[in-house]
Length: 340
Ligand SMILES: [Zn+2]
Image 1: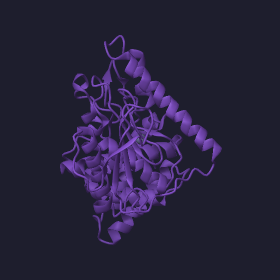
Image 2: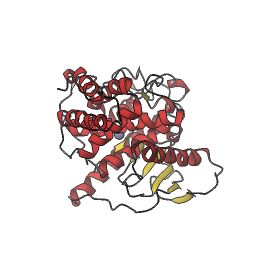
Image 3: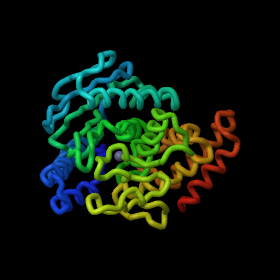
Image 4: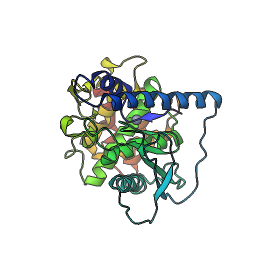
């Protein structure tokens, strides 16, 4: 079970190298890069010591619990807002509470899923993790938000898509369990972007044709305005600047990077989803991809994902829950990105 970071290491590393020359908080950038590496190593060690890395679900009612980590690199430091509690006097606590709620409601209403484990598990969110920490992650049990340095990234609770992306790693963990490497890893990342974008559309009441299909754009501080972390419509075009570097995401199988970061190769599947959503609408497309996710397995390949998406589209179309030409739309979308 991997630690799933929102900002991939090619960005945090570039930022750490470029920060001083760009007049940014170089210490914060360095701390973020080092802390991300440390959390990653901790997870590797844990996974290595217990080969069956299963996290017991907490059966419940899908309640939310927010913790304030008070600038430490620990999680679960102080509970500050639970389900049914009134808003508190901290913008990011309330934003995290709302983002967890929006993600939970999207899964329940649109996909018929009961919280992350489909058994009403408690949704846990941590804010104020680390010191100007420029990342957010899902650690297998909880969603952790950094504050950002305020120059490159704002507080990670500001973009509901961040939370939805990370919690969706939890959904994948409890369904397909896609291994975080090569094509299965790229699909793991893609499903998080797919449902992350859908929750963003759910909150802002947008459909496929109205959304900009950018991931992480609401996270950007003023200096980075207009840039994003990923583009689902046009992978590889989200950013290009001296601070973050240049977006390396693949948009087609011909650009697949063997042994590459899952965040790079995920662009191929992201674009297949975008092409499907433009034709079918985002939520019908999400139902197709979610049904496929539930049938996938840890070492599944892109062609397995494409096949299951088309099969699920056929079943949903047969039952009148989606347009009749959905299977053909899905196949055409995957073929357009070189997956046959
Ligand atoms: Zn991710």
